[in-house]
Length: 546
Image (cartoon, rainbow, N blue to C red; front, top):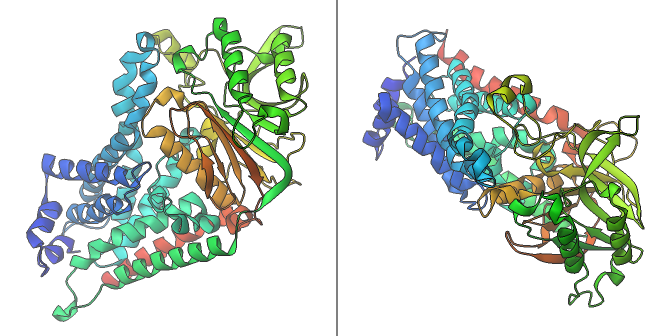
């Protein structure tokens, strides 16, 4: 193969710039990869500067070009390790720029966790960067000159993103496909292929411009076929989204009047039992506040919703709190995040769950226990090894894992698929497939107060919104410090409260859409796209090699 020689001899307006990327070695090559990756984070919420994603994925093609050697066999280790190294540095830049806000959680209790700030800001990105490293290495195995190498990158990096979302409990945060979701029409493709399908599509679209510098046969001037295909794909996605949004207006469920309460409680006061009565009083005062839509406060509200972990105690053990809530509700229903205790059978407290509870009167009539706990936040991986070293998890107490995904049946509401905080980032895992009843509503309660006024809460909202589009379900989202929102089944944010503000949202409940293609056949979407990208990459290989 002769990628370097072929690329270096192109006739283009910027050959020197390209040659510097392709031929770069050592720290220059690492710096190019890191900076390109960091630039890509600007395509994510809250910036949503979509063209920024061209930087990492176009440069990725040229970096892997630079890993090729004219005299090396396809499976030679040196080019594969060179590609993997470039992928690691690009991923490191992308994750540092996109996930730096995780360091804010280490400062909530700085006396205990400030030492871990570098691990959150640089250590986690360093670990996550091994996924794009593996993706680059796999792409290098499928590499060939010409447009087919874009599909090699899509196959390798797309597979790596899927692995990142599933291995070691998974962390599909800021996937490359998220760059396409800030534009409403483009995001609608998620209803067909889901997040991981969007990953492959996004890689093709944003990497395709790399082929524009390829020398056309016999000096002809023409648009490269891969670039044309990528542009056509983007236009088709946009057209589909415009049609889907235009053909489906928001409809509402009769007889449901919602009030979402965003208390904006400082995180350093949130988990102190001595503040329990004051916190509850703050919640009730805010919840009963008169608004323009409902000047009588809670009198006309059928369902009040509070955020995750609303109380610094187990509310079922505090009858006075249940009585105060019942008086305020005036016959309505409260859906709230809460700690739930389960007896061990001897009358003693056994397991403790991070839960959503539905309260009517003074009774807890339904509950859901969180299944997907946050590593190092709600549980400590390798606890027997790490705890003797003085390493603990961030959230006080020891949380137990719920039994599994299931519907929440709250009085007066359609069947609910509950999502507590981190659970909203996992596509296709938020609903129990094959269940007799399909949920008609997402309820996402969260506490992003750990991360302050950073980019993290906006990214969390963007990913939660994508779940609504994928499944065709509306979402009620209530966050302690924001961003709380009512989202319809097509991902339209109908009402929201800004980050870092106290307030209420009074609104109606949107209806669910018909089951989407992803909801019905979601398990097939990613494998089909991955197989297509791999086949196109291999087609380029077979055309070049006898």
